[in-house]
Image 1 (cartoon, rainbow, N blue to C red):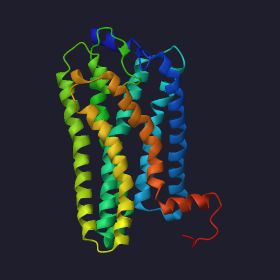
Image 2 (image 1 turned 60 degrees about the horizontal axis):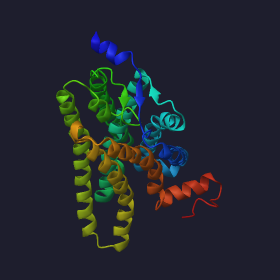
Image 3 (image 1 turned 90 degrees about the horizontal axis):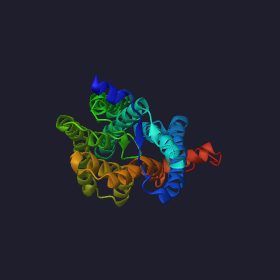
Image 4 (image 1 turned 135 degrees about the vertical axis):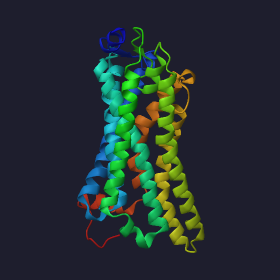
Length: 314
């Protein structure tokens, strides 16, 4: 009963950046701009991948799913964050905190696996181009995306209840700008060894295993590219894969650093800015990274805007 009262009757206070009042308005403007960029960029990718028949390919199917994930991922965090930055009220209800943690973990875990799926797609495109359409058929693409989503939901179903049911002995202040698992575990007043061990195991499965598959895929891609005699072929393969590698580096770099360390060595200030980077900045630049050198997307944009004069234009 003590745990029930402690866990369910008290709202949380998201401390966020309230210890730096002069920084809050600057962060508000910064986050608002990047949130708008995220909404516009990722919505554009989703619409283009649905409306343009030339983009009805496995690569853009996965990219559309990634854009949808980024949209939901950022939207689960930013409105509450902007509200807290704008005014003095920093509170969030228990159920609001639980919902934010659940959605955040589902989407973050799903993205980890989806990036591995996208690397497999690039491997088939570069290393087995003649069999690409046979291997990456629509049914397999749907199955791979379904596996990614199932992994995300499974991770959240396991870790969210364990994290939210920890006794906090009346502590309400979450030293973060969102209800994030390491911050919630760190404020517990009971032994969290089992929860941390479970989080570490799932972190290895959902972070290091997909990352290993990504590195393996790109190792095989690199070997294939080095055997190519055509400079144009090498350049095309590089352009095809460089954008995805950039996104992988930005996303996995910060996530692995944050989640594969013990809670007692978790630096809150450092964690806040790293979380800000991969939840706000990365989703906003992903559309730019993927479209910067992409002639198909540029052509689809021109067509959508009515600027393309003929279907034969490059």
